[in-house]
Image (cartoon, rainbow, N blue to C red; front, side, top):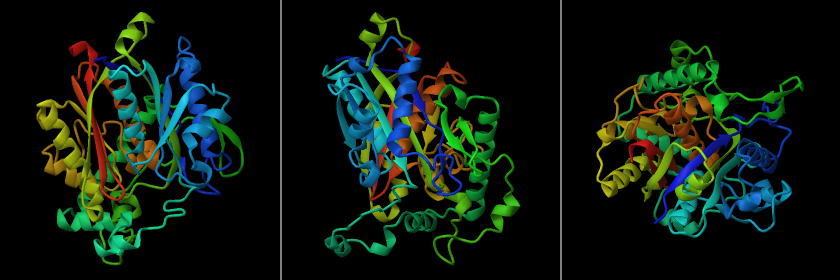
Length: 393
């Protein structure tokens, strides 16, 4: 079988999903995705759009402006009609599922050059837009326990995650994301896109909008619960509604070598896992365990972890159950911050965390051997992927 490597990974900045304050409020999701594709090809001039076998694009809510966005954004961007596209949904892990599909195709010899992407515009396509649950689902689950906030509260209760630990996690997520931004680390992966400030001034957006440079534990402690009156989750310990897109250029190692292209990570495998949708946030625990067992590895063998912080409760529960860490600050988890600070555009995040893992392992931790990216998903889907430093093969 062929080996799949990451040639490059890029993304837009993650911005607020807000009609008055969001920096991308005047853009459609297909326009943001097109800019990310253009940035990917500009950075890699030896690869032409026509060289791509297919584009796999993850998106959680494939309706409205996001209806078959993988195809329509590609065509609207003026890219070759001959390149096949496949829009994929898995809720939040969609972008990661796109990576897995592309990697497997390369490994099986069904093409040597693919793009895997993820996109979500939670302003123009709100969460649960046009959702119509099967009535029979109510015979198996309490519908009131399926919304994301309700699942996060249930995880906090069952796994005994207290509010102060969650606020501490949010604090460090912002601190690390702010430090990474101030030192220019994200500039290596963010494609600048024109947006507008609250006053309407146009500017090139090259930083994530949600990150707070000054954040107070005391202020967080005074915030009201947002999902139930007696709850422990607040806006500070929940990932914010966001807009963003990400894409990776994946290629067989043989072709990359023929083209003399640089790469650092190769795909070692992925694992999808399902769980009770009323505690959907615990899903990465099962996906990571399955992946580690499949590869004959232990938690301690993994040098770096990217875990999407949908909610602080589920992230802490997963980290503790896997034996990675008890509390923030984490030594090897989300070292440039996580979704509590960076935002969580649903279908984008599975691709975004792999883009960021690739950046971290190429720059800050070039000698790390293994990295895992993992995330939970609505309705009880989860995903995890394993990446190996090609210099350690």
